[in-house]
Amino acid sequence: MKRTRAFVLLLLVGCGTNTGVQPLTNDTFKIFKQGSTGLVGSDKIKSDVELQASQYCAGKGKSMQVLNVITGQPPYIFGNFPKAEIQFKCVDPGELRLIGADGERRVSPASPGEVAILSNIPNADISIDGKFIGNAPITAVKLTPGAHIFEVAAKGYAVWKREVTVVQGSVTRVVAELEPVKP
Image (cartoon, rainbow, N blue to C red; front, top):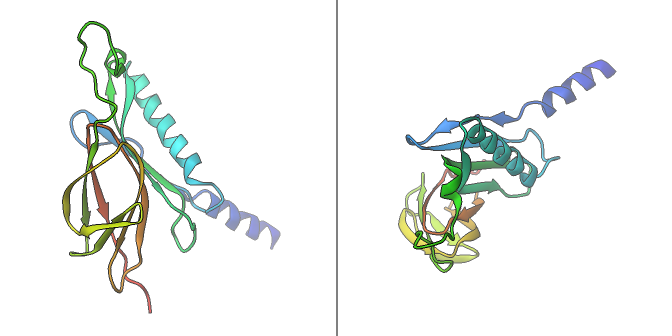
């Protein structure tokens, strides 16, 4: 009986999901990882995918440039386990400098990022950082760079809530897959 419990516990702990490196376009990639329990937080999962992306680029002799990071939010129950997705490019190390000498193109610190928000439920309510901004789909909203909390809600569906990191000067596409609430 003790062996059976230990085996089941080991099986549960080892059932996380990791997609590995997946191409999005010719030069951009993504990695998604989800834990198998709520015992490890999204920060650890995020760190793991960032390391995996960095190692992938290093294997090509390049440096990783993060384009977007999406992490799951607690509570980690009923299948909502810690997760993280990173979208990235592998670039020559010299391309990572934001501030260079003698006329090198620079990105202004005040430059916003842009986000497009889609949902599998038309007209779902969309809030960012607790403020209602409209109904899905929203093709473009400008946001300050950094982490923002996105919530998408519709009657009869569980609220979809994620932290999305908006990257300065880039476009981020968010797709909310709402699931029906079980009676």
